[in-house]
Image (cartoon, rainbow, N blue to C red; front, side):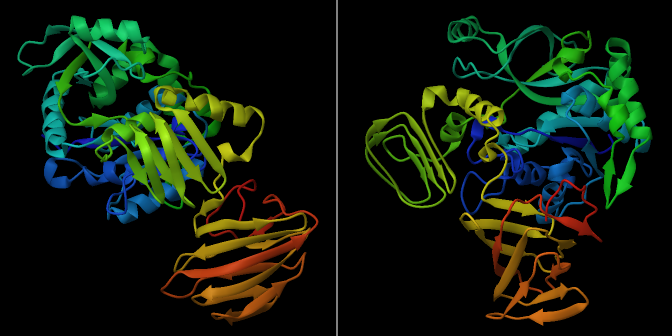
Length: 480
C-alpha cells in the first residue's frame, strides 16, 4: 500500500479554551502540558512518522495562522506536501474536498487520514495501526470514521450508533445512525444501552471514493472546491485558494454533507487514548493531578482545594476552600468557572466578540512572521512594548502618522533603516523615529533580537501603519 496522506485541519478557534486560546492564536498552537511537551499541532505532526506509513501532510488553515503553521512544521523538522489557505471559513466538508483534490492530483489512488490539529492521542503506535487497518477498509470503498468507546455520559461529543459488522473488514461496522451531542440523560442512556461510540472526527478515506460521494450528495461543494483549487495561487510556499469560488461552497460539516447520507460510511472502534481537548475539563482529565485531584500549572498555592484546574500565566494564584473549579489567569484576562460548565466557556467568547472586546482575538503577546511583540504598559499617550525578532527576521518598511517610536536594544544587534540612513544598533543603544519617517527593523544576527519600543503620540492603534516592501506579502489590514 502506498503511503497514507495525512490531512490536518487547522482552522479552529478553540473558543472553549479561552482565555489561553484566542482567535489569532488558537488552541492548536498552545502547549498545555508543560515544558517538555509540544503544542497540540506539534504533537499531531510528531505522530506522523514516515516509518509508520505516512507521507508528508496536507495542512489546511486560514490566512492569519499560516506562519504559525510553518513554524510548527519547522520545529517538527517536517516539510508539508502543501499548506492550503482557506480564504473564508466553510467548515470541514469544503476543506476535506479541497484536500482530496490536492491528493489525487499527485496520487490518484490516495488514501487520506483526515484529522483535526488539536486532538491528544496517548497511544501513538495503536493510532498508526488503526490508520493502516482503516486504510485497508477504505481501499475497499468505505469512508471510515474512528469511534471511541465512551467511558462516561459525555455531553460534549456527538455519538455514533453501531450497525452490523462489515464482512472481511477485521472489525469495522456499518453506521446505523449519527447522534447529535446529547443531554446528560440521553448520554447516560447511550452508555447503558451499549453499541454507541463517541465521534472522534478522524476519518480514513479513499480520496476518489470521497469525491464521488461529494459529487453525488452535495455537488455544490465539489464545484466550489474545484474552482477554488483550479484558480489557487502560490504565495511564499502557501497555496492560496480563490476566494470567490471557495465562498460559493455551502458552509457545512463533512458529517452533515456526506457521512450522515452516504451508504459507504463505516465505523472502526479504536483504543488510542483519544481526547479532543475541547474544553478545560478535558485538559484537567488528561493532566497529571495531585492526591486531591488538582492540576496546577504556573505559580499556584492550593489549600483545602480539590478536583480543580489552576493555571497562571503571570503572578501567584492561591485558592482556599474550593472544589471543582477552573481558574485560568493570563496577563489580560482571568477565567473562573465551575468545571461542570466548562463546555459553556464559548458563550463568554461570543459575548466578547459581540461587544467588540479585543480579549477574544489577541493576547498581549501578538505573534508575527518575524517573531512577536508584547504590550508591557499602556497609557493615554504612550505605549511600551517588547519586540522579539527571530534571527533573519525583518519587519516591513513602514511609517506611522500619529506616533513616534524610541527603540532600546536589550539583546542582540538590530539593523535599523530610518529614511535613507542604515545603522547597526547594539545592546544598550537606542534610536528615535519621528512620526511620518519611513523605517525598518531587521535582525541580521544568529541570536534573537529583543528591544523595548516606547511609542508616544495621539493615536497608538495597530492600524496606524502604512507599509511598503513587505517580504511576507501581508494584506493591508495585517499590522506590523
